[in-house]
Amino acid sequence: MTDAASIREHMEVIGADGVHVGTVDKVEGQRIKLTKRDSGEGAHRGHHHYIPLSLVAEVEGQKVRLSANSDVAVTFEEEKSDPT
Image (cartoon, rainbow, N blue to C red; front, side, top):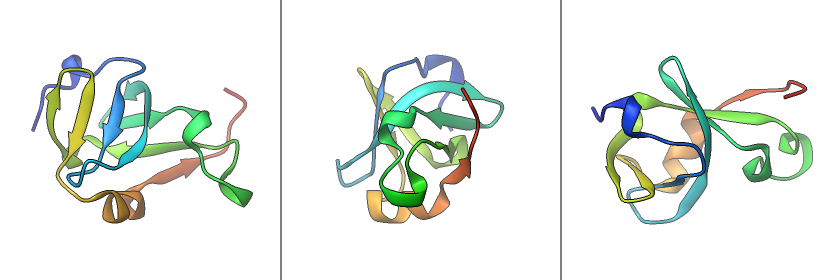
């Protein structure tokens, strides 16, 4: 697993297939908190989503590459509705 300290705010999170999954807001515990801007549509809009650090394959430049393709990675996302 990649060192969480190398993951920084505003890095792009991409699936193993190179497709955009989200943008890092910050690392909280063993999860990457994604920005609300990438929260999706409908009921998902305005919610923070989280990706487990266990899905991180590597950090390359300003991108966090996951070990799963984007369509699979989003199924691992956790959702949290909060005012921040």
